[in-house]
Amino acid sequence: MRSYTRESAAEGVEKALTLLEGRWKLVILFHLFGGQVLRFSDLERAIPKVSQKMLIQQLRQMEKDGIVRRTVHHQVPPKVEYGLTDWGQALCPALDALLSWAAQRDDYAAHIISSES
Image (cartoon, rainbow, N blue to C red; front, side, top):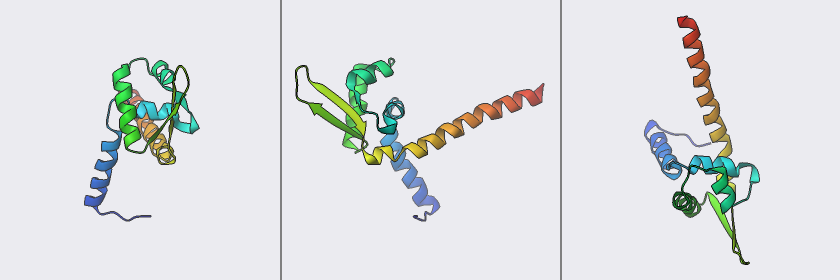
């Protein structure tokens, strides 16, 4: 395991956040975790609030960054599938921890409200 200084840790976090910044990237990742391979249309249905243009843009950025793998099946009509690379799948524990951390806020807020009553 690497050892970090305060500065190198801050730099590393900044680099990681740059890869994940974007309104829909984390949502896309959660849909693809666990080895899921989804067609573009499946992702559109799974994330109804995202525009087609934005979904394409976010997927292309994640593909360029090595997080998502795009597979084109040459058939009529064309079939395009997306899945996570091994490196993308390695994000799962970190995002699970983030989800648990966010859930603690709800518990904390409930505790504050009950103690004020």
